[in-house]
Structures are given as structure tokens and as C-alpha cells.
Image 1 (cartoon, helix red, strand yellow):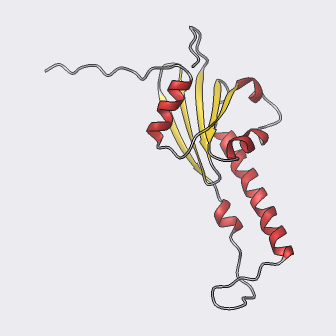
Image 2: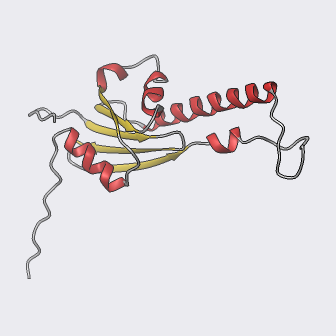
Image 3: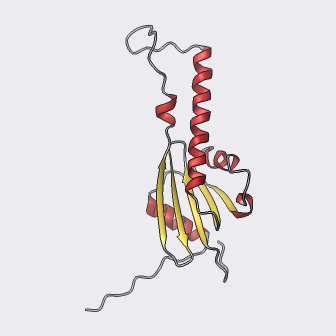
Length: 153
């Protein structure tokens, strides 16, 4: 856990897999902003019609596989760029998620800027709800959830 007297402008957690990203930003005043970004990966890499060997069958040749792989790479690059574009320009970052997507996101970080200096960790984490992600991000950055004030009767 990280806890310091000086807090950056914001602290942001990104949970990402190949189909979506959830961005949770906690501002210095504890205001929370959550955004979900969807990937076009499935839509852009689904084999298109053409000659079929039979009903429900699709002939996939080497050339088709290469085109599908290239479409997949391009769709992921576009998705990662949109995630980077949705992040605040300052503050600490933690990237979470299953599989390879968190590392691929970092590999596709903008070449300019201070991404490496802002990145605090890449953590493996399975599928979570927005609330669970917020709790994990708060825990990672050592920030307690704001206390609810008791209502006067």
C-alpha cells in the first residue's frame, strides 16, 4: 500500500482485457470518475462470409488467417490508444487485469509523455465489478473510502 502526505493530482486504476477497459479515477478531493470503454475486437476479427464448405462451415486459409491476425493487431492498437486517450494526463496509474492485456496496454503507451514515471504497478486481477475495482484501487493507493455521515433523525 502506498500512503503519503502528498497526493498527486489523481490516482487512476485501469482494469483491462481484450473486450473492455474500466477506468477508475480518484481525484485529490476523493471525487470518483468511472468510465467503461469497449473494444471492437470481436466485430473486426470475425471471419467474413465467402465460400463455405457447407452450412455453418468457413474455410480459413493461411492468407485469411494472416488478414484476421492483422485486423486483430490493428483493433487492439486502436483500443489501447482510446484507453490512453481516456486517462488523465497527470497522476499515478495502476493497471490491472487478466491475461496479457495489461502488459500489452503498457507496451502500446504513447512514446511521448511520462507514462513510465506515473506507472506504479501492473497487477493480475480477474473479472471485477466497478465497485470491486474501486475498492482495489483505493486499497492499492492506501486511500480509505470516504466515511458516510450518520443521518440525524
